[in-house]
Length: 202
Image (tube, rainbow, N blue to C red):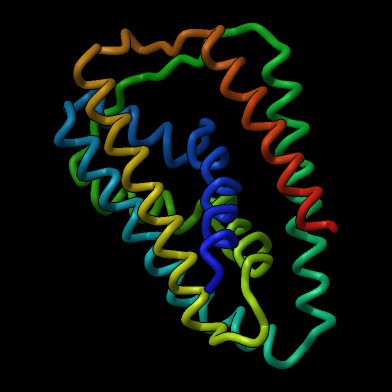
């Protein structure tokens, strides 16, 4: 696989991982209630959920690409439209003031809850079904490419959520994220997603 293609995939999914969603809010809430260890267990659960996603999607996407160029083209456009939709939401959110408040929620089994959070997360499903196929090359082994891209996505999730757990545990976070920082992150992430959508559409 082309290293440039892998790098661009990482750059495309990184804003999606870093912006608030079910996964990141779950990890943060568990860290607030149980410390870094609870956050790490939640992170492990989320990553395990995406491992199952990757195993199922790699087989399904490989079959679609191999048998139906039309369906693959539809997936390509679906991916571009989904990125534009997310970009607009992020940019609109970045223009509005208002803190993102996290509430500590105790959980007895962060690993299992994290697994279910990732498994049922629609954003994760869309990454696998609509975005991941855009970075595959038809002439190469499709299933292998799906597993490599999935490994990059899961590795980035593990790295970001692990850092988040340690940061929140270290500073306490007081249940809030800085509003100005949130708006900058969402604005930049939205812009990056628009660039990615343009590349996919082209």
